[in-house]
Length: 346
Image (cartoon, rainbow, N blue to C red; front, side):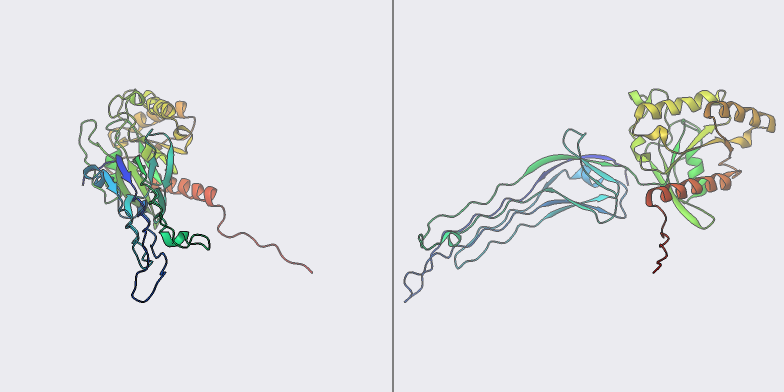
């Protein structure tokens, strides 16, 4: 299945049905009076977040969604049938933006969340509605309300606990393949990852979700390489795992390149908790490892971990560090699960 994280759709709700003008006509019953029914309401256009989806590819082949109109009323006080709603089933984590691609209409972050994007028109009143003591035979009825049309953008931001960052060929896909059942493309040339991948990673009996996005290069915020198109997928992550290729000549410059792109992108990515890891250490001897770590620690101002996704060295320690950050983030957002009750005294 192809990955698509941005789609433009055209929506129209259903128009309301017209009210009816009708009079009761039966043998031996004179002055039967008005009996025109109301029109039915038009269908709504609704977006719903559902589980089991991680792409907007369905909206590449169908961009127009029109709800049904309500039926008109009829005699004998018969109300017209309501129009059927249209439900857009989108992945959890989908943002719905207005046509300007900036105004956020809704952010569907939990399964089952719904939002009405286009409200169907109300049905018109039949002439029986207008009957009164001074107007016992009204000959007018209301038309139904017109449909509502709008154009919206659907933007998917994958929901993951950990986001992988690094230059192309930093070993992100190798790490994901070694720690989960995900099978991203792994090769010895840059930009093997062309779209985000998700993997479920487990350590010490606890599982969490890791998102691997295409590698960034200098100038990505200005559109170079694959640009910053996929950075939105790590906006919701609790912690970022920054992998630096230990075999590179200038590890400090590689680190600063990624940090510069995060700051240029904004959205608070540069301020997120981040774990820096010197990867591919299986290709380095002890002296070179320590030297590369010293270079990194000078620019990071914090600890740097060792890891090799190919051999598994240091992977468990990195996963435990990630789990610790995830637990802290959940505690910070949700607070303690159980609050201590105050002891009652008479």
